[in-house]
Amino acid sequence: MSITRYTRRSPVFSPWLELEDMSARLNRLFSEPGSGEAARKNFWTPSVNVEESNEELRLTAELPGMNIDDVEIEVENNILSLRGEKKEEEEKDDRKFHVWERSYGRFERSFTLPRTVKPDGISAHFRDGILHIVMPKAPEAKSRKISIKAEG
Image (cartoon, rainbow, N blue to C red):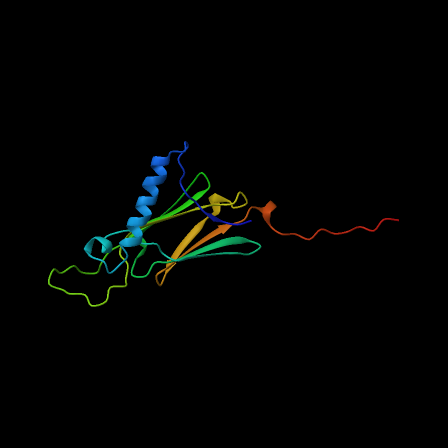
């Protein structure tokens, strides 16, 4: 069982949509932080870990500099979506950057949940810039020992 990244797909294949997707990827590639004001206002992707135990799946996302009001979590059709926006602390026109490595802007991450996760039991908490999402497994998905009976 695993949680996987969710990729939105068009119901009908279209080479034009594929070309548009490739163009968007190239734009993101060439507008990395440090390449101008437009790049700083773009999307960014928070780092995520997903771990599994017998009882649950746990997703943690690094959201430094954000607070609980900047983040939204939604589950729909077995897809867990994280959305939010990381804003710059202060904007001044008279500043000049020598190094720009921090990312700002909107983000969205989506993951397809396994059928064994109980969506009604999902909970989340936010502490020290880390979002913790706990997804309990359904009872039938949990590991259990099967006893062996001797015959004869």
